[in-house]
Image (cartoon, rainbow, N blue to C red):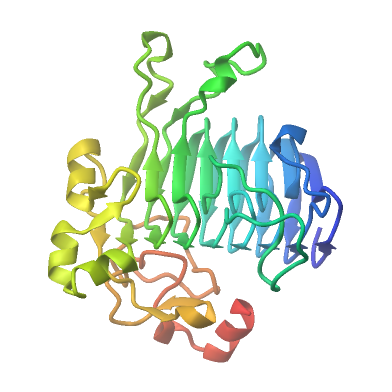
Length: 338
């Protein structure tokens, strides 16, 4: 499915299943006009179930009432890359009770905001409708394993930039949701730029204390990320040194990066700093050449290019974009961003 538009449909833009399918260069906009909620099990941009080897590339999901790109149950070997998910009432990208996926080089903005059902679309970037309290992430990996979340830019999402979530209800009376099959384990979250997200920039479920559930959350790694909260930097009078040392970046847990490291023993090479976006008020989230994110990422062999198709240097930058002056054509960059 290439160069298609799914817009203003009653429940969702499209659904999908099967193996070796491609969704590329499509626009999935303002779907679920009837505002069905999560108890209906599917709504928003799309729902993709029981698939293998899907590629979702350069898809724009904006203003859907529900998740933007949603893989749910028994999916494997998916690639979601170079997508722009903005203003959806659910997560921008949601990958749950599945395994083996690459989520890379995506931009996730302002997902999960509460909308009012009784008003019409209030801008070209926002839907209307309900909000689910536990949702609103840029990227949500839920009860899945071997998911690699690399080089995404997550800004202004209501709940979290990225969340790795254990979902206890899936073991409650549903024989199809085996705890042996669906575990939150062996996931990697590297090289992501997480700024001004509402709860935590990054949230990772702890291992459940119930001995019966031992091992359901294990071996999840997160590092080489950049965290930033503009409001906290302002509280420190824009002193980057004090902000980096003491500023809170995990809002729900009220943790600084240093505290986060001590509690999780992760993110030892991550940084807390101003990412120096090129023009965030114009929704241009490329980074300046002097950004702390430039050239500070981990080497990832599969990452040959950034969101705009520019080659990745060695080492790569953190986030979806290499520095703005790295592109040979700024006009091309603006066209793709808009």
